[in-house]
Length: 398
Image (cartoon, rainbow, N blue to C red):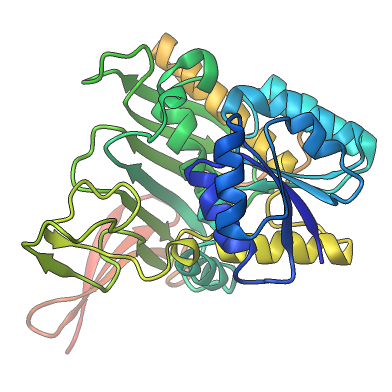
């Protein structure tokens, strides 16, 4: 059994508690921290947690705590991670790891120097659909991955600190883009170096000093492109979608608004439907198990099992650092309106990655560009001469 100090009782803390006391059940939250002692006590009563506190230092220092799970606002991550590492505790931190790459790198160095287990709690790479899609990609089902589009959009965050740049580090990019960027890295290959970013962002609607809408492109050394779309002005709930394009196939994933369950209600008594749902009347899209659908259950199953066995989780602090570096480049691109280099002074992946092979030899003289079945049943081939580059087409009889 892993004895956990859970820091934070907000929305993310609630999802964490439900998953920690659910899927693996043998792991227990031993102490919970909230800025409000009253809220900490109420949370402890609800989830059967024996200890509650409004002092996170005290929670970390307890001898009967094995691991610290951080579900706190972004500006607190650095201080808490350093303290947990110094106390010799395993550290599991929510996204984004840092306010920027410098903070993330400092945290990475701290946990590695202390020799403590560390995990980056990026739940959306653990959704059941994503895990299945990744399995198919790694088995070669869609060939070489050339393009990944990941979108997260909703009406905006649930707590005030998200909207405050001093506490969050930014807006929709750092809040939602971190998910999208890491989803793309998983499909493209985390060993492939991100090279540069082109990003547009603006505050289109809300009276705040952070962006509420952003679109970006991340170019990788092997020529693949990761595209992220993030928005706090989307109406209609939470839109979580991914598309993966490869040389031999395509994968489409819709995680939230088309869950397979739809309900119409004209009552005013429906209550909570799902995270970021804007209404409880009309056509609704309930989620049977939010923790499972959003990846929390599989995330903690992986993270805590690997900790028990001395392994490495799917996502650790190094991954959080790379994501922060890409986000930094995105913000720089927003300012410069140009491609911005991803600065990675610490890179542990491949170097000199080659682009996907473009040649598809048809015969000794030609490469095949495209094969298509026509309405009359004949097959048309588009060919390119290997020597001259001349393009031609050929009709194959029915």
